[in-house]
Length: 88
Image (cartoon, rainbow, N blue to C red; front, side, top):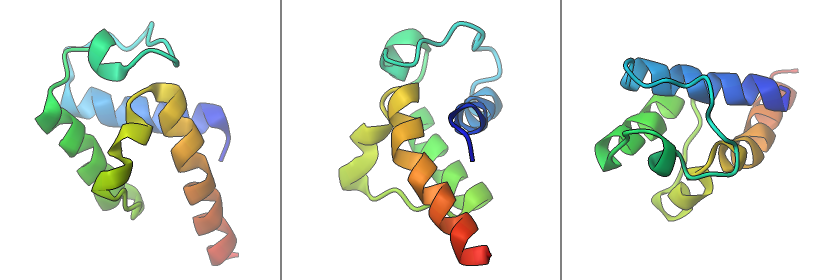
């Protein structure tokens, strides 16, 4: 899975959770909560959607890895690649 695919996946989840947010100019290195009107429950919803849609578990101790879009990509891409390799 490419970086762009992981970014799109995260932005799709955020769009489903907060459909009124403008996601067209999300800066990869800026905290998502600083750019978007997301609260802690929205963030938990993102983690739950990752588990539900993609069977990706994010331990609470690692939640901060997902604070930016770039962090999401860096953290999640190896997990998606490992899942793909396990299916092959």
